[in-house]
Length: 556
Image (cartoon, rainbow, N blue to C red):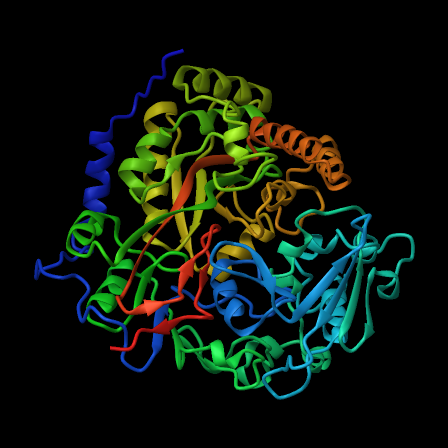
């Protein structure tokens, strides 16, 4: 069926142009947009976080801003190299039982905390059980479900069958040996060991709920440690002199600013105040892309990443409890135009959920399920579904829709475009609201919204990192969507190491999720960023995270 779109791009761009007037300075010089154009002489690395990290507690962090800091100051049993391979971190080696159910990690003798204490297997046991604690303060761990691979972890976290922390299948055999028992073979379990919720935590946090809010009480074990934290302004890291591989740490300082304006961020980069601009935490103005690419071809980078941009529908809301209304809104936008002419950062339209770049059975999961574009954009069908949905709710027209997004110029442009498309194509009136990142997350977690921006990047290289997000047990499921059949498919994929069976189950789950439209896929991300010449060892990984832990500045 031929797709039809009643909304014209001309009217869209008139709206966006009016919004942009007066807030987008041009590169007046027409010269090298890199400003000073070279890495800082003192081996410092400076980038923008855009906002205050909501939490620097590994058990409670659930966003990229927090993770960008945490990945520098903590280290798990493994870490990732530039090719995404699992390499030894705090664990120098490990053994996996023949049945794939028992992992035995041997920790380094020289692993230390930033205060000089030894990092022991007890610290990992403490941290993982702490993350599972159903009474964790100030809030329960949103990522606790990532530990459910471990024997009795879910039962302890959910208060089932009288299971206690002592029953959870993680145990320090001695100071340098950690034994982990799983429920079923998990091919990607090692990959999880470098994820934030699996980081160790210093046991001094036991009696201080606010420990992660004060630089004086944050004891860490990574390549860097925090030296200064000016709330809502900046964070400064310096090398951890007690880090086991301190000789590999070449940067003398990592400085994060918190500027939530893409034009200001670019200006700071151009004038030499930043060494890095853009994703994963910052943003470069899209209208500057062509100029920057032409004037700074060696600094301007575009890298496809395994991440997706979507909208969430609050399925507990009276209006959006109706699947036909959700389907109508999802079918009434033009993803190609949004990706190419609004986002303009190398994004590609999304008609599925799991993005390209995630491993499948034999090749890329998205390639293996290339026919799994689960719906089409069809204005006439969307109108029909909207009318049917309204009738089912006893409504003559859709009440004004509220769309929330976290403060960010790109999110605003996308929201404005989609609101305009809904108006033109379906006659729907929607208003947008930008919210500070921490407030936005809290509102989403509490289902205090109707429609909200969402995004998800891989935590490890397997489709499950996307699929289990929407189980009824996931602390990161902010939609209200709960489906026993979906949970059963995820459980089936959990229970086997047969890759063909796993992938089939996850593909069926993805299809179910998309068909219900609890989420509205929009596009798959690419990371757009700039980095000054002279830096080595700093890279964006397959999932879009930045790794600066082995960064250096070339000698001149």
